[in-house]
Length: 338
Image 1 (spheres, rainbow, N blue to C red):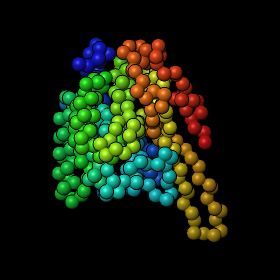
Image 2: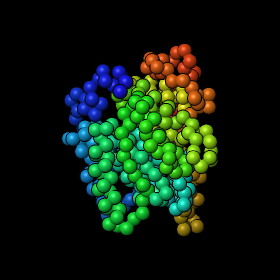
Image 3: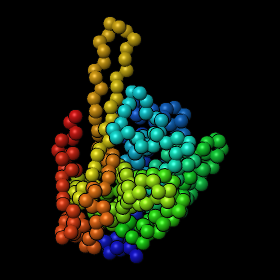
Image 4: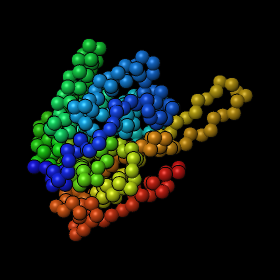
């Protein structure tokens, strides 16, 4: 059963007066070096063709559009795209995966599946990716997965194992079923990824409940790293701070948030008469597009903490709720002037 905060409102993917168009990665300008590395010429055009094919707003509404923060997350997580001229902090956690590495990735609110399907052919077959969304959106994920798999097979590519599963936000039984379904065959470390999920205030409580539940410490069948809480990587594009700030304030009660930074070195000149390039500096990745990518971990004090039943207490605090902090607000005020 879905929580009252969702059932009391209209269908989340079909708000009144919905007027959106398919997106393109060309509309964002993350950084010159990283955007260039992400694909040029025919490869980039082919990529854009696939992005267009995946989107189906007419049938699936909001879920049928690939949203801008997903493109930023893809650039960050694409293994082996970064070069000696580009460094991320925290580094891409998937860069270290080898053909023998085992890893499980759960994507929350996958929508078109763009992010998971973009990552799959660059990850080893020992990686398992679980795309999730509302039950009525799963057919879109399965359709796009089949189309992508056919394309990978035709090109002789290896790719991660990909499946689609239903996961309505706030449905704790669905979270339990999902975790149970992957527990037996779970591969190595678990990472949760998400992009552009913070938009409708009535969805904040069920979204937060889902993220808390997915990041509770899980035991592994192989006995390694017992009790570790999964890492959560979440990409967010600022659209309305007045509406979105309450989510991040509540989120910060349960999670630490570290924004991803990028350091790009200027190319060196072969001309000895030219002055050396300035030393590289760190900037927030995505800052040119009002996009944040947060690397998040559960605060140790919140592990196994009882989540309040009341949405009001969850979002604004109350008896038994972790103490509020101003992580997000401080990031906005300072804008990471490093």
